[in-house]
Amino acid sequence: MNLSFILLMSCTGKENTSTEEPYNSSSKETIVVVVAHPDDETAIGPVMAKYSKDNDVYLIIVTDGSYGVTDHAGIPEGDDLIKIRNIEAACSCEALGAHPPIHLGLIDGLGFYARGNFYEQMSTMKDKLHEQFKKLQPTIVLTFGPDGDTGHHDHRLVGNMTTEVLLSSADYKEIDLYHYGWTKDQSDKFPDWNLGFVAKEYLDTAISFDEEDEQRAFASIRCHKSQYPQEELDAWVELESRDDSNILYFRKAVRSMERRTAF
Ligand SMILES: [Zn+2]
Image 1 (cartoon, rainbow, N blue to C red):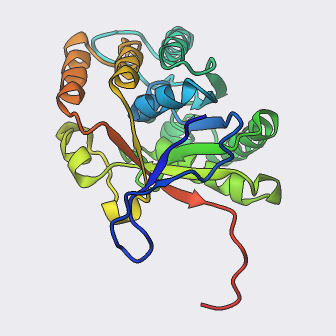
Image 2 (cartoon, rainbow, N blue to C red):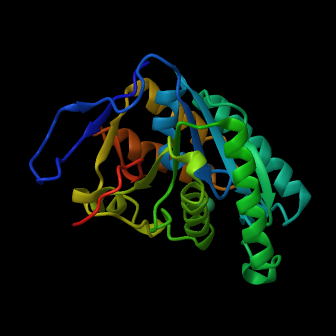
Image 3 (cartoon, protein in one colour):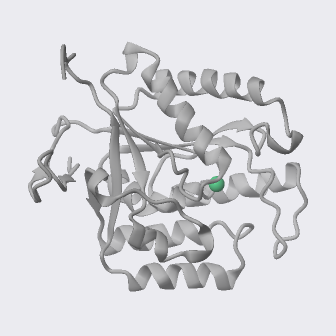
């Protein structure tokens, strides 16, 4: 088992290049990634590919992606689009070596644009996340931070609800929750995507990945043909290929802690 989470900075702010092994290194981890739409997993594809080799990696997709209408694909909103995006998500998980995607099937847009009742959707999402966490028994959960990756309201809501659910029950106290976050430099690489970012000082976990992980992530990106025209997929892969820093950042959002009595 090879979960090497590198602690970037110690709490004193001093550079610390030691490798943290916070988990039981003798058994497989169950890592659950929670996202809003089929294709959101591409943000952390290389990390999913890395850990899929020796662990169980699951992808939960909260909405049906039915709002992802694009000019180049010309597929109207509705069941056909949902079906195609489900196939694309399955293709992506296979490329990454993860288990087939788990679809919670909420209506894309989560209460916006008059697409379903917002409060109903929130309580459905909560119930379904509890159900999946109880079933999958994750040891690690990865989801959006407050920036929501691209700032999309569904991303913000899904990251928020995943965090709320995990904080709501002591049954989850052994689960480590990480929010993923872009550095300013990473965000600047994609000026058209309006990516949120987090100051590097707060991103306490850096995960490196190798060439093979990256190639599998590229294959997963290329599954999402209904969402990106070919030339956009090519440009995306090309841009990531040229960046050889090969590292993604996370912030540990929930960890079990001893209660402190005073600051
Ligand atoms: Zn999305």
